[in-house]
Image 1 (spheres, rainbow, N blue to C red):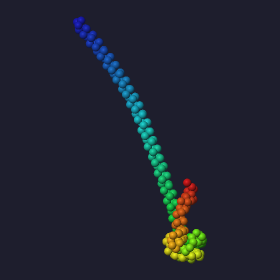
Image 2 (cartoon, one colour; image 1 turned 90 degrees about the vertical axis):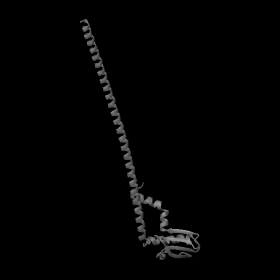
Image 3 (cartoon, helix red, strand yellow; image 1 turned 180 degrees about the horizontal axis):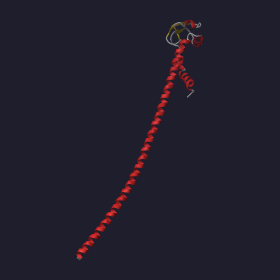
Image 4 (cartoon, one colour; image 1 turned 30 degrees about the vertical axis):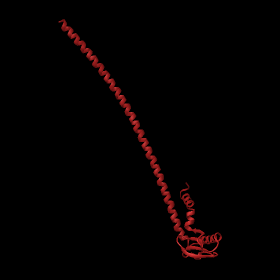
Length: 189
């Protein structure tokens, strides 16, 4: 019986040690699991911060793009408005050709030609406008000009030329006229 008792005692001791080892292993496993859960939670928080940062950057990028696009659209609309105003200006010029201001313009242009060009001249005007010109010394007047009006003067040999047509005068001041129209319509840049 002594061996039997010793056997029981060793088995009981072995069982206790095994239970203690299992208990310690379970405690250690629980600590590891808690530690991993904390790491996971911290990683989730960090990932959420990164996602929020990325979303905010994209939001800011889209807002910046939208503002830039709005500025472009606004600039195009303003440019269209200025272009339409210039078209209306040219339409109004057609009507103005019948008024006193245009007669005065033609008289002043003819005087300028007379003072700037010497010798025999050929003056080109739009059909029906010959009567608007005062007498210009040594000048032949031809009604063969195409366009909005004005005078194209050249020496009879074609070497000297003075272009006082409406289109040319407009082109010379195009940028200034565009700026003035813009300022009038939109209150300056």
